[in-house]
Image (cartoon, rainbow over all chains, first blue to last red):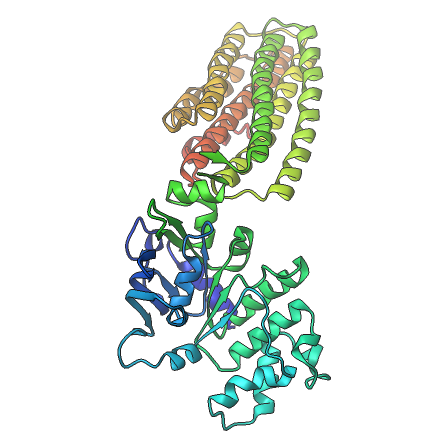
Length: 283
Length: 233
């Protein structure tokens, strides 16, 4: 039921409401899980991204696309303060999670990362059992409920349960690449986040495992808001509801060119720069 | 600017050129089919039928090349719209060729029957309107010219009017059975020309879609009038 509602929501969105020339990209009348306000991220003196205003709709998949070095991953990492962990990184502007600026003085970054989970490019299970990989985050967060149920639920949501239910005590490393990535997704969602960030989650996987993850992402949006960085434009076209296209200016600072429903971006982009990029004409 | 998909863009351009050549051929076939009816000339009629086999062959070939390009290149944005236009154009031109064959065959079955010069003149007039329409429609596509594409519905209007009027001309042929048989067939020729006019408007709509990303009917009203004389296909 939730899937049907989500699908109709996308259809109802008017392109004119969403596509932007510059400045804020805020889908009207849709709940927004996480959004940036005039976001700029610096690595030392280098400004990696600037003027990023993008609002990710709740229970939708937002894809960030753009050429290498345009700051897609930087923007993604700003959504859960992962940039804090990079020496010299500095953020200007705001990232609002449910309306609260996560860079505000009273905000605990650990809590932010619990609410905004992350899946990385390369599957990175812990050197622990499959069960512990999923249970670990909850355990260190002081989870008091039934851990078995939590692990099973997360593995089921990650479409991995049937494949691992009989070998939960085996190492996470015993799984195939695609299974490991789904294990990492299970690990992320075991903490019951509101938003799941995915940084090129299939770039290390074969085509079958890739499609499986894409299908899984489509199912996960019923429960989570998903933001995905991908180099693969076909993947953005297949798997996302909204697409943000970032490019670089002459100072190599990434900026948002266009944001809108994926269907519009890939059939009728408003900006010539977007058209040129997705049809392979650039430079 | 560097084109990172040069091979694909070249193949797409080749496909477009193939179809533009078909459009030129279709335009010539319209002229030949009208001459076949009006002169009348049975050699021309046979030639039209023969030329259409070439259009049919090209239609299948373009379809295969189109499928392969879609499967292998997965075009996006303007490229995707262009591919959509090419598929539509392929079908439209194939049908245009079929209409020419219809006219040519009507020339064959009416050969030797008595004729009305008024009706012959009207068929000629329709042909003189349709052929420039085809040229304009193709030119608008080649030049990516939205303003030129938007001229087409107005160019189609007099053809529709003449087609509607054809019914009266046939009635005026009186009670000569042989003449009536000829005239009734000419109503079908008129209808075929009217359809070709509509097909050119379709091409113009595709050009507008290519350029704007908006798919819209240029002239619902004009298209809706085609059945007014009870001569609908």
